[in-house]
Length: 292
Length: 289
Image (tube, rainbow over all chains, first blue to last red; front, side):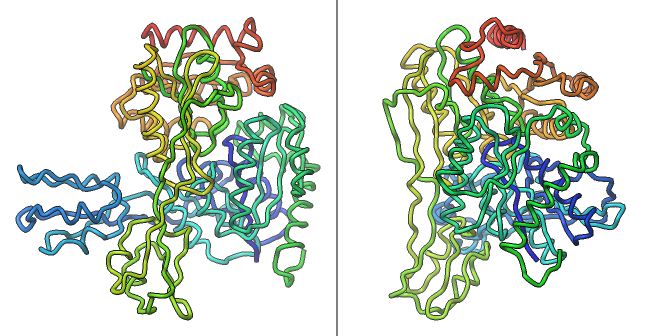
């Protein structure tokens, strides 16, 4: 069993294109695979499959409720809150919780000496399970609109996926901050998708630095490889990073993707290439007991 | 006027459009609020006048000489960041949210909170005005707070230099840095593309904008990649009373200009896409959007 995250610093380089197509390719080749969409702010992977929803779990976070009859407006809870989520004006006896800023750490409850703080759950979003018509599972993390951090949803979705199947594909959120870290920390291998442009290269370098500090093995897929310049290829050579696959720009790929269609179903060469890439990753990083 | 450019879906063309807006007409303050993946400095090579340290958050670390391995902090931590170790507890950097609770409740004061101080904010001049941008160190959090700092700086610079317009190039997604980018601005532009993902993410992005009490204007980039989906997006906008500011065709010159370190307006001023971008920019400035 292996978990492979498909990620990229820059948005729109083709993460979901790769994640959905490799998932489909693995299924077509009778591998037990599962797809987890960890891009909880903008989850799109499920749209590429013929699916039905089979389950939906609420993810909540506790936020404090302050009983002003018991509160002495001493300010200790505000002192303990490191997220500025408690607004306090002692002279006029006003105390408010700014729920959007609260991380649900519970420090205010510990701080209060007067039993004035209880907690209520607030909805952050859902982890949704889907089943394809061939009976394969897709799990999606989806934030409620207006929620600041997708991290708790990502954690729940990955937890729900557990260790089921032989190959779990994690479609990661863009960037290199906490949502990205949360996703790739669960992976055994990371595929970074990029494009040969100055923006693509700059964000790639940022992702590479992060993965190196985390000690994660990774390789690069270069999408739209014939647009832009050849600085990404040069970079992979200098840094000795495996360039797993180059995908030239084809308008047909862009058009199929735009319609929510899988490229691998229409393009057997693409399917074979992807399969070969993931076979190699598996051979080098996966569980040796599994047969391809 | 503060104008925010966001998208929901990444890679729809936010930064390329922001760059074009920033080099069309009068001087501007250009603020790169995509602090996770700041890119505009690559086109504009600003001269830095100023560099400021940004403390994104704190991480708990254990002082092994004091820890008695009692496990109280494990019970209190809600982020599953602390686990029992052989001699002292173990704290996961990835899971720690920097809430300080463990450091408060530790009976022997064995937990120190270390600030993450590797992130930076830069400001300086570029060829058509001033620029501010944040660079979040890899793996760090609290990007919304850094966005607020970038915006504050941009406002001060605009005031000091008598510049009227501030362009905020936003991050992808609809989470904390995106919300920080649009809160309280005068105008929000959402850049989308005619893909199923583009439409879906547009719908979610309009959600955070309307929630903040603004009405976004929509730009459909690369519209000709899927004309029927472009129509669908236009219809959805009309049904929901959002104005489509303009549509831009797929243009290889956009990529070429980026490779050359220029905006499309600097690289190919007579390009049809650039003319449309200029029209949209003038409409924004003249309050027609």
